Amino acid sequence: MAYPEVEKAGKSDKNIGMKNSSKIISIILLSLVIMPFAGHAQNPIIQTIYTADPAPMVYNDTVYLYTGHDEDGSNWFTMKNWHVYSTTDMVNWTDHGSPLSLKTFKWAKKDAWAGQCIERNGKFYWYVPMNQANGKGMAIGVAVSDRPTGPFVDALGKLLMTTGWGDIDPTVYIDDDGQAYLYWGNPQLYYVKLNNDMISYDKHVGIVKVPLTAKSFKLRIINAKNTFKWAKSINGLASHTVKNASDNKYYWYVSAIDKRTNKKVIGVAVGDKAIGPFTDVLGEPLVSEHCGSGNINPTVVFDDAKQPYLTWGNSKLWYVKLNSDMSSYDQKAGIRPIPSDKKDWFVSQIKRTVNSTGKRFTTYEEGPWFYKRNGLYYLIYPAGGVPEHLAYSTSSGPTGPWVYQDTIMPVIGKGGAFTNHPGIIDYKGKSFLFYHDGALPGGGGFDRSVCVEEFKYNPDGTIHRIAATKAGVVKGVANLNPYIRRQAETIAWEEGVETAFDSITGIYVTDINNGDYIKVRSVDFGKGAESFEASVASASAGGKIEIHLDSVTGTLLGECPVKNTGGWQDWDVQSCKAKKVKGVHDLFFVFKGAQGNLFNLDWWGFRTQ
Image (tube, rainbow, N blue to C red; front, top):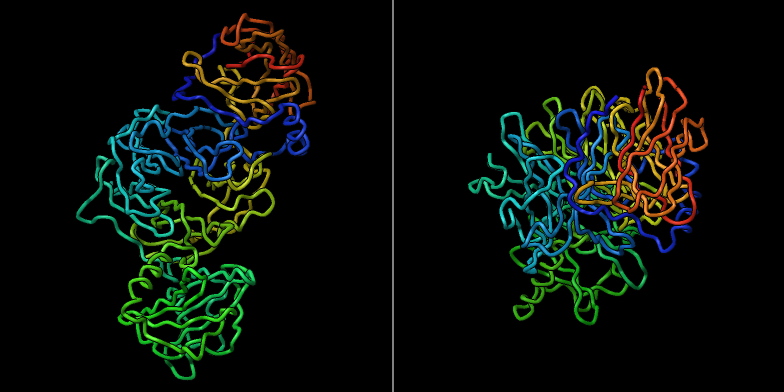
């Protein structure tokens, strides 16, 4: 039988795999770490490179997954391009390479960070943040393509929008009435109403800053309202958390109402972590005078000698000179109004704290994911401090007001990264949460990997806690047909191999060494296959493909010899007989041969006759 062609779309860049100083050492480490999970692991779902910031999209019965790409061995968020993967079963992922990179945007210089793609009227719009080449910070751009896998081009030739600070992590959704919304931001949260062309926004509405209230996103400080027994209430949105270098402790200064006097005061508490819990060290307010009304914005600033001053006020600014214990002040100097000749300095120092971590009052951190389900609007977001967990808020309307709900994924312990980034879809009657961790060998906070978990909504639309697991999606939503041509870069799990791009061949599997393998899940053999064939290329002595069922040492279906084809891009179809097997099985291609690279693999398939 002839194979129906399965198109390999959107392959427009080289897929750079995890490069280790020694492939032999890498294989040993991978074996020690991965082999215990080889039969069951699904997470992370991509192993050939480090991927981050997942953005899934369902289109034409296929899930397309758009990701960032952490460069190997990074000590920062070093990201130069974005990648695309796809699946129709949620367990096997096809690599479509990198159809979008910093080079696409002439106005951008670095930081290809988290974005999201959406379809409208047959075109695909990918909103991505980048650092501008002119040095003016992060901005959001938009790329467009006729295909979900690209290639993409800069839709404007310039940025789409910027606020001047924190313009990262855009998320996009088109409501039932056709109105599209774009949310983004760290540490602030913004949105715009996109126009129908998807490459401009309603300038009359403009860029809207979402109020980060305690009701909408929950106060960041743990047990904030119960910290001070003397307080009738506290205003967590008028506070400042500062780390004291001398004792490595955190000090929280917050506006409160003293239940004894019913007057506004400032309290101070100390803790071991930036988000608390904090302990009241005084048992009474730190400052009880001149606190006035409104948001008095208590803020600690430091002079060149590292002397701390606590400032507050609105129409009139006051300050005290803090002592080294950070919980008392110089009583001799007392409480003073800021003198006119010092006001500019104090105001400039206060402004510098606006986007600092110590001035992040609610749990909202960054990376929002915006969508609607059953008439309810959701914002899922990484919540702080750091390390991040995932939380969510809901609303009856697309622009709020938002109501905080709960944590949906706690901080990931072992194998986690200090950031996280959510993406949620419904697909084939099931719901899935995408996120990232640092669990691959060599991974961590700057070399992350995308994962996915299946979950169920509660009947009222709320979301229960979702655990990060190794198993991931235990049962796929469909089985894989082995009797059509299958791209070798369709992978559930792999060890040792990488993928690469050629302008003629597209994406293929390369860097195949003795003992490497590829796992493909839930393969439906039906009544059984009789032969196997694969498109291969080799400039070495070649090797062979062992075809096993259900594990790397499971039942051997066949051995396909791979001979020298004359070059690494000289492709030839080589085949072997296959032991007849029925039903659904996981398939393992185990590669064997001498030392060094054995061959490249483009596609494979089985025949029934």
